[in-house]
Amino acid sequence: MTDPLDQYGALPFRWCRDGSLKIMLVTTRGRKRWMIPKGWPISGLAPHDSAAREAFEEAGLIGSVHPQSLGSFEYIKRLAHGREVKCVIKVFPLRVDHQRDHWLEEGEREAKWFSIKEAVSVISEPGLRQILLHFGSQSSKADEADGG
Image 1 (cartoon, one colour):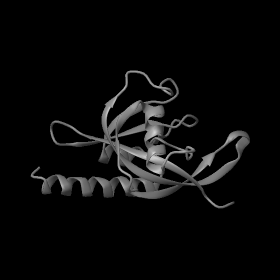
Image 2: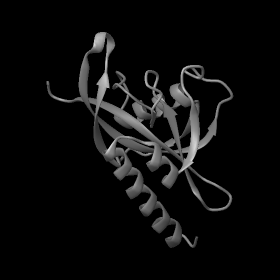
Image 3: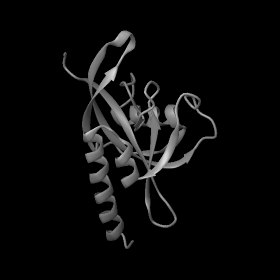
C-alpha cells in the first residue's frame, strides 16, 4: 500500500442546557457507518477550514472551528472499483452554533447527536474512539475549571 493520504475531519460538538456534551456523527455514503464529517483537502483552505467545510456539506453545520488539531487517526477508504487507500484524518474541534434546515448531502447521509459514550460505542475506528474519549475528558475538566 502507498503512503497514507491526508484528509481533514471536524469533531462537531455542542453543550446542552443540562451541561452535557454532545457530538454529531454522520453516516458514510457506502456502508452507512457512523463517522465524523471528513474529506479531502480543499484547495485554498487551511486544514481546519477544510474540516469545517466538510461539516457544512455533510451535515449543514455552522460554527467556529479551532485551528489546532485534536490528533489524527488512520482508516482504509474504499474507492470506486474496489480500490482501497489508507488515509490519515486530522481532526479539528468545531463548536456548532446551529444546523441549517437543508444542506448539500442531506439525502445521502444521516446526521445525529450522540453523547461521547454513545458515539464511542457506534464508531468502528479505534483511533477516532481514542480522540473522542480524550476530548470528552478534557472538555469536562475545562468545564469544571470554568465553574461547571
